[in-house]
Length: 200
Image (cartoon, rainbow, N blue to C red; front, top):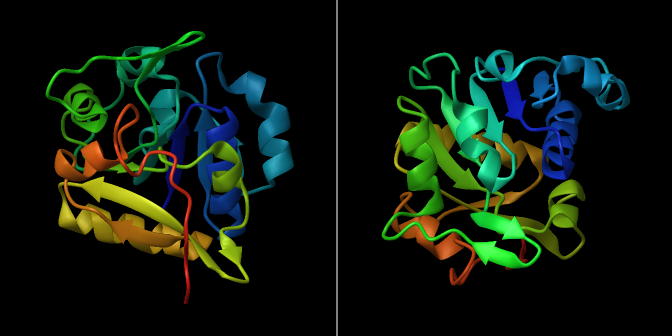
């Protein structure tokens, strides 16, 4: 199984580190082009490479890690998804200073993202955790870091669960994109910003 990441910021690099540590190949991308990612992929080692967003999006599982206002441009013009898995790690911050949460009406953030990526099997995950918790080793003496995830495709969720379990997280399926996604959504979701451990 191969992996791609659209975005190359803090979250992207943390996920890439987990992927290569688990022995997976990963392609990172950003809006400025592969030539700007040389140092990043060199630090990650030989399992990481840089490519365009279109290249990253051809992977079996793709992580979307860009800022909310950049999502439409990041997903535009990509190859047909054809059932590949898109993991949406974003939160709907229209801006950060001052903080403004985008009003999506009745939609959850990942339902909105899914509308921009027809044919993708979308999973919502990692958006409830602060970046330092994503980057850290999720295995602690007291237990493993809980990772909530939601999605509408059972097979995609099983695949995702197995991948992040391999990172060391304790994955918790909380349902579909509408109900589960709402629990994780910034601006009122009770799981947003929640950090907890599962005792094994």
